[in-house]
Image (tube, rainbow, N blue to C red):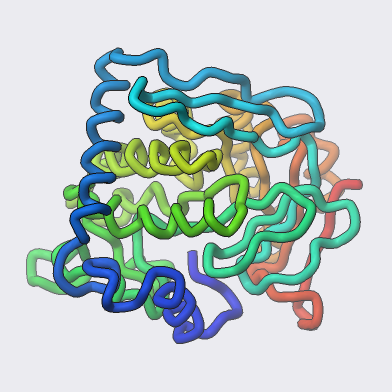
Amino acid sequence: MSYRGRSVESIRRARLRRHGGAANGRLAGFGTVDSVARRGILTLLTVVACALAGCSAGATGSATGSSAPVTRTATPSSAAPIPSIDLPPTGATPDYQLGGAYPAPAGVGIVVRDGTAAPADDVYSVCYVNGFQTQPGELPLWPDDLLLKSAEGELVHDPDWPDEVIVDTRDAEAVAAIVSPWIDGCGTDGYDAVEFDNLDTYTRTDGALTFDDNLTVAKILVAIAHEHGLAAGQKNAAEHTAQLHADAGFDFAIAEECAAWDECRSYTDVYGDAVIAIEYSDSLPRPFSAVCADAATPASVVLRDRDLVTPDDPAYVFETCD
């Protein structure tokens, strides 16, 4: 998914401002990650490996609960306590603001914004991070060896988003080293959670990447999010929801068009009420009122315009079930 409605140069500048530009080692696509960052990633890799081997009890908690945020404590290692993690408030109305930030509409309790924007005030805030393919204008943030290439040496682009290049997730540690500062920025800025987009890139690579490649990256990214006290949201790969929750440790899901594609139960069967559903006005095969009345629809659902524009744009769509 692209950062809809924003210039690619403004996105690039925001990323570089947050993380120190080209001086911040490999983050800007030059050289290698500084030793402190690499030690942190290696520590997290050890934590993940230990957790998978049964070295610790792991995370505990429930994906369902009252209208107040549910607290989940994740403890992947005994080296240091992990901050408590709040899940999205059950049944709260969401807004998806990737096309530009604006004050949350009345009645909204969850707002998702791009990680280069500040979190919304007085609501549960989710930070959008794309850990599996590049965003428009962000190629300089990725070293060339982490961009997937065809047998002919050409960059592999997402066919639906041709200005986005798929990241080569076969080097999980190196991918995590790039994304880790973005997650850190989400925590520093005061977000409650992080959404990891494009978990399903392996389906667009003609077999060059596998689900296991992306799962390995996801495990590390979720561990980093938990270390910063952030809940981790699954995005895409509905058919692997149970494994992504159990093995990677995702806490909730953001389900785009699950009603349109009849996939909502794939998420709610695993995460219960901890599912945020986003439907789009240009692709819904039935009236939104019918979606709201459907028992399979998650309690937190919103209808938005495809480009996620701001309210001052004539194309703006925002409709809830209330």
